[in-house]
Image 1 (tube, rainbow, N blue to C red):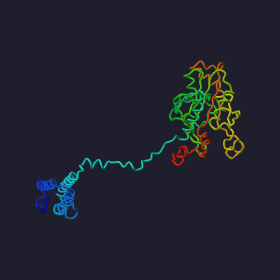
Image 2: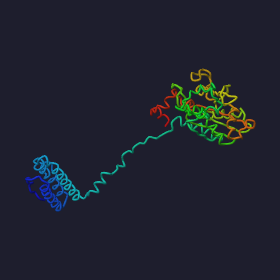
Image 3: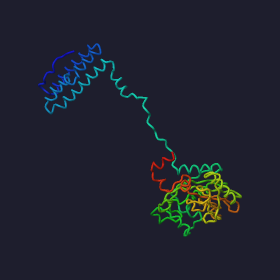
Image 4: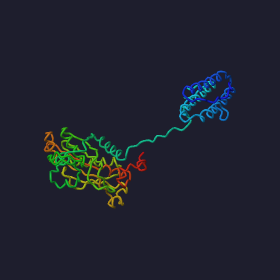
Length: 368
């Protein structure tokens, strides 16, 4: 191994620097070629890379510090290349080539604990939608879907809400702007219920029909603990020969028991909906107190949950325009509709509807 002193540089142009560093690289290579054991390798390391007396330390002291500002960049680049050359020679002499060092840097310690990945879960609204769908699928109902942006005809007129009907005012409809030139029945709006899919299905399919329609609906409601301008519904339609109100009662009684437990009772009260006649509101015995009376049911023992009724012949008349088989003299049917958020709030004990939409992981984490 050479112990020649580092000479001073008299010139700092590229040619002079190349010649000076080439000489040092040759000295380093010649010295590494004669290494014959761990002790020699360690002595070589100290000779070139030692912090106080190493040759590279001398190069830094003599050349880098003395170089004019315009030459420092060129000299620094060559200095770094020389240092890497010496380190590579040491790796080769010690038996660990560059490829081994790279592999060592990429090695994985399999004894370390793995990264925990959070398990996803259905949103409570989605879960409730699926639960309701499964109940009716077991009864032979298929699932129908339709557009959220609807025409006035499908949303209102075909559902027996003629223009000027006062029941339209209860829907708080959100309409698409700048459609005044269109005929009223062709104007677009955000659907206020999933009932339009009932008409679209009857226009495509002759009876018998058994369908449920889960989906998102929109109304211009002020947000509070139990109301939201966006919410979800599940509506159902059953059309065939000899369908009676008893069939409707039996179907909904079975569905409520499947959703809330076999001890739940149902009762029906007269109501009004433009698209059904007769119509009824459905109540279930309070699932919180078992019908004894509590704050949740306002001490009545009953909770109103959904609306239903026999399909009005006027609705069949609209369907008959494209499907003559919907003759109200030969067929009958029933329809029902329920709010998904209301059912989810009851099933999971949630008091604020806004929690469903806030995206708070502390709330949603309960349903994992």
